[in-house]
Image (cartoon, rainbow, N blue to C red; front, side):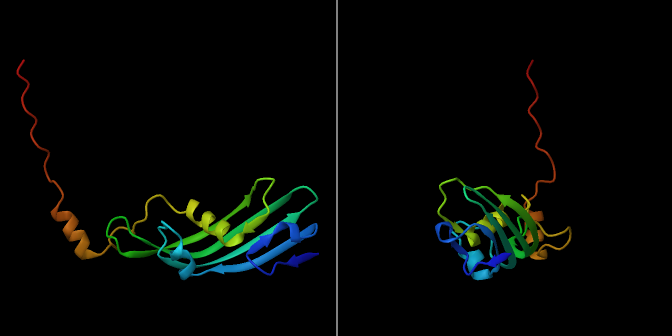
Length: 146
C-alpha cells in the first residue's frame, strides 16, 4: 500500500517503513526565487516516490513541464521542455528531505548547456545588433622578417 505524503518537507524519523508518494508542482514563483538561478519561471509537475526500509530507502523523482530561460544569443525569454527522472541517493544520516529542492536540482542538471531559439527565431533587433559587431575579415598577419 502506498501512503500519500502531506508535504514536500519530509521528516524521515516521522515515517514508518513503507512506500510513500507525493505529486506536487514547482511554479514560476518558486523556480525564479532560487538564488543564482538561470530559471526565469515555468510550470513543472513533479512526482516523488519513496520506498522506506529499516536502514535505508530508495527515492525516485520525476519532473515534467516547461521552464523559461534567457536565450544565449538574443537574451529574450524562451521556453524549454523539462522531462527527467532519477533515483536520488542521499547520505545515510539524512533526517529531512526537501522534495521541492530535489526536483529543482533535477531540472537544472537536465537543462541543455546552450539555451537558444531555433535558427531564425531570435529577436530580430538583437540579431541585427550582433551582426553589426561581427568581424567580416581576418586581420592581416605581419610578414615574418626571416
